[in-house]
Image 1 (cartoon, one colour):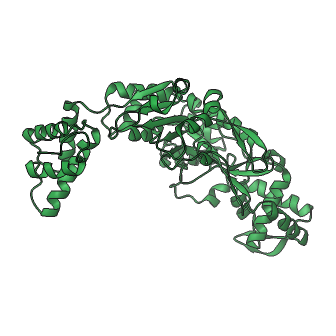
Image 2 (cartoon, helix red, strand yellow):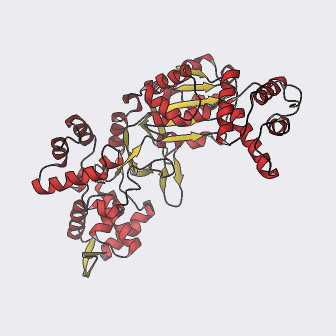
Image 3 (cartoon, helix red, strand yellow):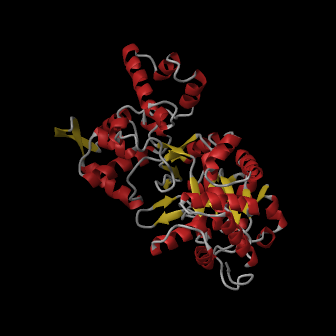
Length: 479
């Protein structure tokens, strides 16, 4: 990705403005950053922050910061798998600049690993393996079948994580309000969520089910606006650990319409890093302790990063805490050291352990009593304990009326009183989800029977009969 594409992806400028700046840059030959400042499109501080935060593309193989044997192994595996390659295809596959791909090919030729073949494809010479190169490929595949972007070093990854720590970003009250929309969240709760997110420290959301704990946690990541760089993978002790996951990481500029190959011709920072929004990862009842360890792919012989590493510099939600297959205390004990010291230890299948930063907004959400789930020592490690309670009668009525209007349902004041009284007489507390679900149920009922959308005795009884369980704390739902 080019610096100009990144500015558009971050929504700092429109594509039209950037193209104007690029035209002036072409005429003057000056750096794009200077042109943007001169045109008044960005201030100098913003340009400096962006450029200083981007790792430059390595010009030499040793500048990659990893064992050179791993670089050549990746080259020969790629060429063995595809038959032949070109500068562009090698650059794209290994996530290096086209300039470095040229250097790599020349060094491989000098070592008798590759040779240039007659003929040109897409304007480029063809590159093929020599017998020595094919022999190297066989050996390389026995170590790992991974073919793809080259890794960054563990040390470089750790430095980058610390540099873009989630605690470094300032979260504003306006950003929190925007992130929570369209949820109905009272001001006091908004403030608590905002302060906790701004601190970047662990959070416990607790309270009765159906009042938005999960929805609040899911939206917390939207309060952060900064870009983070995620590596395709990192290397430790000669092993590759994949980090980037398209199902988790939102790549900036993914919908720009520019092909990867095109942007590789003019990379202005290291392509092994992917500009993304801060990630959000959620795990519920399916969470087990082994999901917090490296996953070794036996056949391919590389590792997949665990959940909390994929959530690095972002938000990790442990939803429905206390309902996992693993005991709560076992899960909490797994994170005692990481939460206290902001570091974690992972183990390779060889038995070797290594240290890695632990940097994410860790959010626990539960509808069980916190005192039943964890002892005081662990409660102390959760500095922000936020009770998400149900709505008052007035708040419930406002939301119910709003949702009814969205569905085109006539909801009179008498019908409102009848609904609220029926829920309370059933012995069930008011909850925000009820106010959203009741109009939906009434709409479904009226649509099916082809009758006017009106909240009345019949339609309210139908909706509450589906929502409120018989014998669950009171009498049956009545209208």
